[in-house]
Image: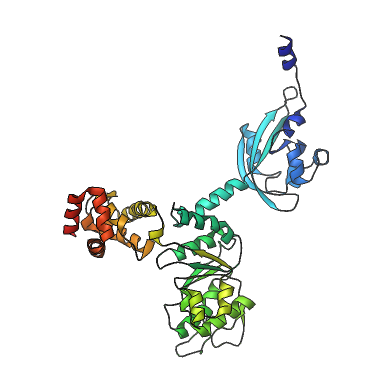
Length: 415
């Protein structure tokens, strides 16, 4: 009985309780002047509780959540807790993302109103959300170990302005990865420009990249900005960089070193601020040895490097991608297609995909277009896939293992 009485009469100081909470806490009056704050918030702002007492909280917290903030006023007027997110400037002048929760309290005797502000550091949560946004939301799908390695590199690639070289077979998604890196970087609000270095002859490619002035060549009736100028502040992605002609390799090297260049036919330099990401399915080291690619440019491009695996190397990802593309195209075309038959899934599971993810996407798009019911059958797949399955021992074996020799024989004979 004595122990219970002693426990009930235990009255620690309020500040001692607040100091035990691992979040920034401040008590402010109706005018949002600080009454007290805990040790965590003192360390965060560099002010002691005594120094901050009586000062408007926006002068201490250095944030937008100050005296005239609607969220705090709403909490005072409604008597209900309100939350909002924003940044504060820490002791080292670094922005820290915070979740602010304002809870109104009333003093029992005097009836005076105040607010309890709780500041929760949400840096870790924003990092998780950002990684999610850089994954499936941006078209990067995969649960395989090799794709997880790529996902782990994304924050590193996004938090720097260094050049990135993306390698991988045709159709592996190099352009999607490049754009995901751009969107997650500080340049994400500026343009993302993609140029295929193998799609145009040298003369047109130079004009496309660096622009030209009027009269630079026949048909140049007006000045034209190149892609580097159009990408100002953002990112330019040069895909198939291995096909870039040697003369343009020299000019590109100059742009990387000096951040400026001469448009075609101009004597006036243009200065640009862009990040360069390049992609190729070719072996640049081999091209260097053959004298088809400049070694100094290779080293400038190969600062950060990421390799996208072929689809056949991504264990378990084929089914994930099939489901994703099926839902996407069914919704896009307004079709009622819901799934693939077991035989169609087995067939696609054993296919080798020389065109990688792009080819799988095209296969599913074809099937959704052709299918008139709810289930994509084997006959709804492209003829070349069926022909390949009919002559590939691996495909026959896969079907036989799944369905038994009799069913497998029937499927193969139909193909």
